[in-house]
Image (cartoon, rainbow over all chains, first blue to last red; front, top):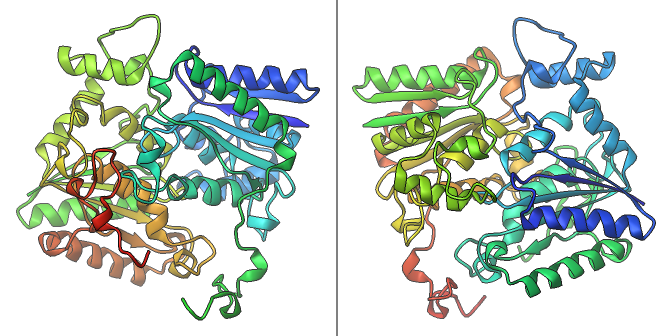
Length: 240
Length: 240
């Protein structure tokens, strides 16, 4: 299988860095292929504006989605964005490797999404959710947190991690068609012993090498919604 | 009152731009003060790295939180970050004005948070949630969406907007102590008639000028949690 890891951490010697290089080696040793986009090393610019494009459909008013549609037609995406789109086409599995910053993606990775997941090329015209461009491919978040697991439950002070990740898992990865796997989470990454780090690396390797057997998160299907994109009444339990 | 609007949109003529300039004028006409950080105009760099700092505590390993703690001690934040921290200190009300991109903040605004909300200066050592640095101040999201409201409900295809915004409202704004007001949302911004835009501008003005009377979103208090940051059992209903 072809794995595409989008990796966002400013320190190569960080545990995020270790997870990335360990994953690449383990996957390649097992006969898979793995490409890493190291956004910090690439000095990826996450700010969306006219530099996303070599083409221009309206020079007087910058409407990103209109420019994206136009760029899809005329092959007008900037080279750095086009390169990432090609890696997405190539991969069977997409992984975001990042530290959870402010309960979300670091800006450099959020901006990668803002720029690369473009209307026309990646979604739109009926291509979304289970009919999305990346239907049949898998995606997974691999992240580190500052606090322990107990802070990220339904009764924990920070709230449930699955609620916190919902806008990324459902709103970004599922939106463009991926089967979204449960996240791999390293809790309290900055306070880990070397032994605990080693255990996490092994657990991560196991997860990656058995990824075909991991059931994806279950979301409603397009068929469950009516023409106004509301769940059909038959899908809503009377008890609710 | 002092209003601080952090505004993130690449097109000044956008409706986000109109909401920003309309708000500033309406607030000033009513005797308030208003400062706008126009992140695109400022060419704000949202990527967190050593450029966040003029100081350095560990040259061999970049650990952002350690550098933030050190910079807090030695006044070592970069000038662009320090300027934003001063606006936060100055304001009574913080507003994020942005288009909802991929169910979250545009990268330029996410990176503003990543950089400005620094450990030591803004949070840490018991300063968080209802004991946060900005206790007693208000914050509010003002955003535009691509789709209509019906897509963003509990039975809508994109999921409940309040769940989508929870990592921002609770994880960012509440984390640092703000009383978080319900968001002001312009639905389907790109398809609005001029009349509808005018109605939204008036509604937004009313919201801002009566902001003292808007009840904040209710979140649990630090007192509701035990020493492991779990809700005390007495707070959890037996029916759950």
